[in-house]
Length: 146
Image (tube, rainbow, N blue to C red; front, side, top):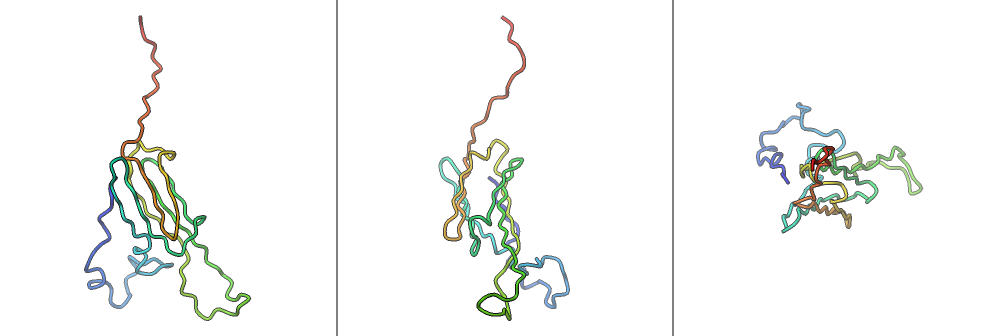
């Protein structure tokens, strides 16, 4: 399990773009704080790695996990409601976010999707990834000689 150490710079706001002229590093849906959306704690136990991912405001059916080539990707997508009015009145301003965010972790190519377990409760996704996944022996097509 290789957690990322990048994206945590104390001086990002200090040396950032004071006039908003530079488009880099800005997410059009979430703004400059998009990197704060999927804060993750990674714990190591005797037999697994436990990930606690903060996903406030998301529902269980808006979160997906995919394991491909040893990379576990967590994605959350919240639909943007284009309707500017509802039964309660017309929206003047909407500040609740909508869009997509994702985060990936390299967990090793020996890990299979059935080895990973996940639970979503109270805006926190808890994922358990085994340390030593069961390695399947390669199937041999050779015939032994007696």
